[in-house]
Every structure is written in structure tokens, then in C-alpha cells.
Image (tube, rainbow, N blue to C red; front, side):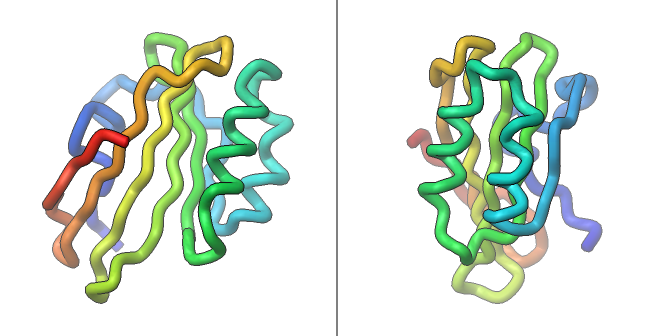
Length: 116
């Protein structure tokens, strides 16, 4: 694909990710990966995944340098090649730190970022 999504806020900046728990293409696969996450984060991750429809085609979970878990789910946009990425940042106790959405055009450029 070659496009760099997830570059809008801070996710994906050099050195920001210290561990990847999973990166999968379906909702059911993401749900099956929940046991890989720390116990305190599992309930929050399950809820985040469940709120996404079956139109979402990428799910991931990473730990950042501050010890937070970055959960993402991605959905193709209405314009062919565009994409929306939803982020949920939770601390090691499973509490929400931040939640936002980034929208990308077909060329992979960040068009819009919105706090959720």
C-alpha cells in the first residue's frame, strides 16, 4: 500500500511503540487476541472492538513508551482509498487516557483529526 496512516497525533512517531500485541484484519481475529493484552486492559479493549462494525478491516494493539496501550480500528472511507482510523489510548489500569479519530484521503494525507 505504501501510505503512512496514523501519523496525525503522535502514534507511530519514531520510538513511540515499544511492544506490539497484535495487528489483524478482522473483528473476530481481534477479539481472539484480547488474551494477549494485560488483564486490566482486556475489558476496555473488548468494548472498543465490539463497537466496530464488520466493515472495519484492521485492528491493532501496541504499548507506547509511557506504558499506555494504543488500540486502533480502521475502516475504509466512502471515497475509494480513503480511510478512518479510530484510536483509544488506555493506561495500564484500563482507564481511558485519550480517544480520537483520524481521517485520510486516498493519497494517505491526514485530512481531519477529531477528539472522541
